[in-house]
Image (cartoon, rainbow, N blue to C red; front, side, top):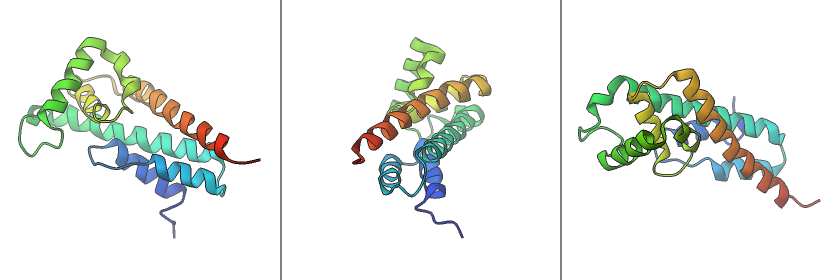
Length: 147
């Protein structure tokens, strides 16, 4: 059976953290890195893949139900959707590598789906940004390991 606090747990935590659900994956990544039981590159790959897949879920949410964004039950609040829409309209595709940012990143990925951004291009741009963010965390964690 898979242990959910190990690499599979990191993948799932990163996936949830990138969706509209409030969740964090950074602490688990650093804890696993500092424990030293798994190679850093595996943790980086799993966190990046999980987080990018979560963003793809948001893209799908925006792509297929964007006309519901003003409904009270819609998981992205109208103000956050409006901010992300403004950012996307101003910077376009080049805002997508910043989808890892707190508060604006998740709505930004929903807006990208609503604007029908090409999925492959979306995955490349978002994946690059999310991988870069996790790479910085891994490098910081590696620097904190004595010896």
